[in-house]
Length: 142
Image (cartoon, rainbow, N blue to C red):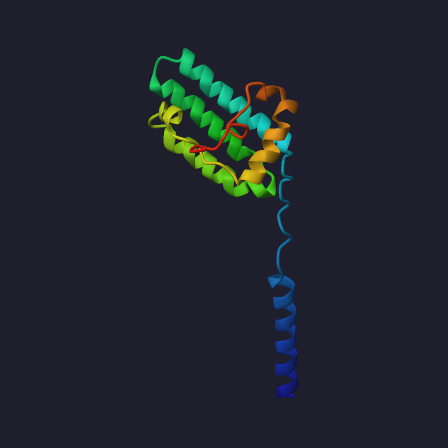
């Protein structure tokens, strides 16, 4: 009888552990934006930065524009092949907040050439990219 009780207790514990210890439902992941939406964010932020260089009089004011640019890039879910690049780019922006004009003299990180080519080909379809971006410019040193 004691053995039967022990087996039943172990079975009950196993059932409860399985029911309670299973994996939770995974959180839904955000859908990646299109290349065009990604370009819109890059071009809008770049344009705001360029405008700040011409209109703001204090480094802190330009730094606020860079913070907003970085926040907008972090808020979106980039296409899968741009996730690493987006992290590098937002770090580049965040690092520049303390010296905002350094973005003028430091080259931004760049994704692989095939990705740059793909994005550059789509820039003309994005109104915010009327001036082009670093995706359509030759790589530094070329």
